[in-house]
Figure: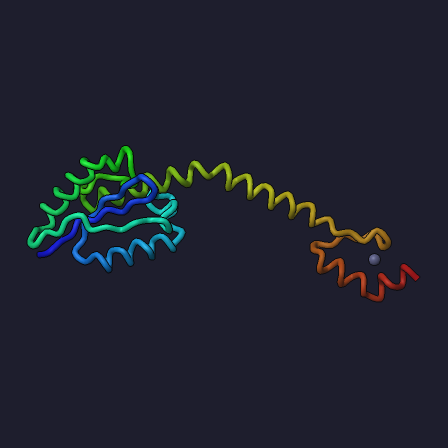
Length: 161
Ligand SMILES: [Zn+2]
C-alpha cells in the first residue's frame, strides 16, 4: 500500500510523520491545531506558520516498515531532541497514549500553580463582591444585582427620603 513520509517545518524546527493520505493527514493536523487540547505539543505551538512537504513517496510498504522508515527520518533530522516530534514512531498505540498522557499531565502540572493562582484571584474577587452593602439601610447583599434591585425598592427609598 502506498505511503508518504512528510516533514513539517516551523522556523528551523522539523516534524516528521508518515501517512497514507497526505491531504487527510494535513487536515487532521489543522484540526488538531484548532483544537486547544493539543496546544501542549511542540508541533502546535506555532503551527499556523508551518510548511508541509512530502519528502518520500513509497509505492508499497506495510505498517511495520513504514514506522521504521519514519523513525529513520526522525533520527536523521533529530526531531525528538532538536525538533517538533515528541515520541519515537515505533511506539505502539498504547505506549503512545501513555507517553502522550505523560506529556499532557506534565503540562497540566506545570500550569497547576498558574491555574490555582487564577482560581484564588477569582475567589478573592468573589469574596469582595459578596460584601455588596447598602450603608443607608445597613444591609448586605450577595450580589451587585441584588444590591441594585434593593436600591430601587420601597424599603430603601423610604430610608433616603
Ligand atoms: Zn438601602
